[in-house]
Amino acid sequence: MPDSVTKLGGRAFYGNTRLNAADVGNGLAVLAPEVFAQCTALRAVVVGRGVTSIKAEAFAGDRVLSWIQFQGSTLPTIHPTAFSGVAPGAVAHVLVEGVDGYGIPGTLLNLAVVQQPVSVANEIQKDIDDAIDDGVWAQKTNVKRPGTGDN
Image (cartoon, rainbow, N blue to C red; front, side, top):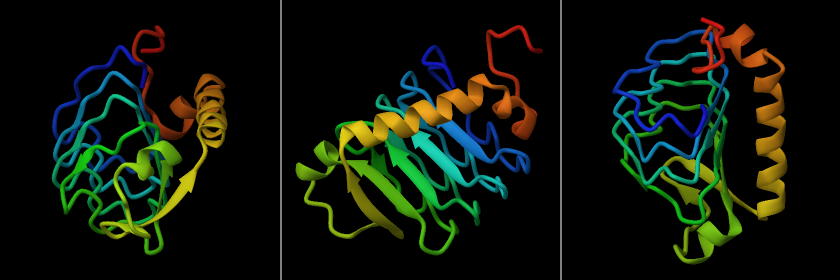
């Protein structure tokens, strides 16, 4: 999502069976309840730097979601049910700077935590952005990017 997106209502992508990756831009502060819930093809999510709160069941039932990348230097407040029902062994990738101040153990709710340097996170972000720019986003999700004229 472009950084110009500052709000998504609850259940905005609920039940979207074609969405396989989501890049939540830096403009959003809150991921509303069930915003990406029951997206049964969703495998990877990048949570932008601006996100400060992830509400109840935001990703509930996303049973193949296995990669969650937190881009911020601090972790958002995460509701205990935000990631209920994600893939067994799902991994939260947290910037090293985001982990140091929080003393996070090896798990975050039901997610394993991997600390990674900012340079790795930036490279992952670039790969996702390139896929979106190449049209993979629209082809695989059937969702058009706002402001592109592809409506």
